[in-house]
Length: 82
Image (tube, rainbow, N blue to C red; front, side, top):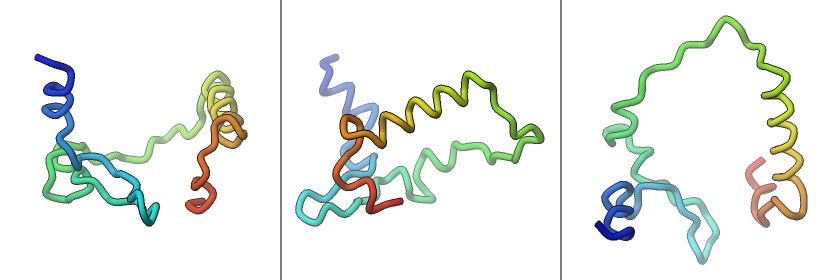
């Protein structure tokens, strides 16, 4: 199977959110539909008792935060959605 064929089978066009090229508005993908496959197959989440995370997880989170809020990692529209 060719790469493009397998990509379409895995995620058909319109599955994921995208940005409108003209208005830069987010266009919702089909994964957000209540009757769509992904939400039907997701298990309900319950809040865990332990809200603590490891020091390593905290370091990774901080590293990602620094990257995505730096000139190298940020995108021009990200601060509109915060």
